[in-house]
Length: 138
Image (cartoon, rainbow, N blue to C red; front, side, top):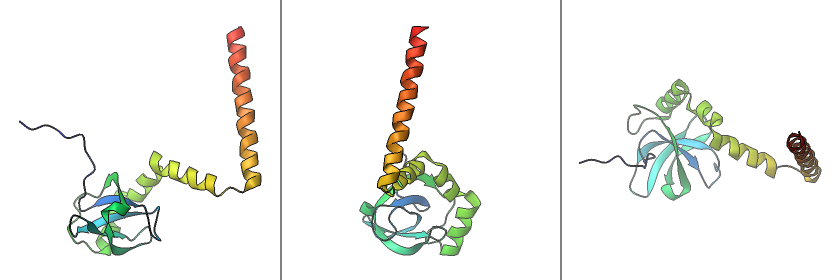
């Protein structure tokens, strides 16, 4: 009797990961080889992440993965697979990546730009209130 697991993101060769710390924080890479239960060799030839050993606790597994990637594949093979399957484009279109980009943009605003955002939110809120009030009264 086998039951399907709810868990879908496994540590596997070809899994696309998001780096949580280090100089490449916020970039994506691919697991090229599993070293042991603590570390894996990752590589991100199209995202600028150099091939290196990385601990799992500093990685976040994404739902994306490369199909048919051989164990210990070199940077050239990984790059070809990434371009063939358009994984970076899929990542950029995902809601997860878009939320991260929005957070980064919001963090990079200066004081005047934050003031402009506040005024835009107030104007939108005022418009919504007027529309709702008009709809209720008719």
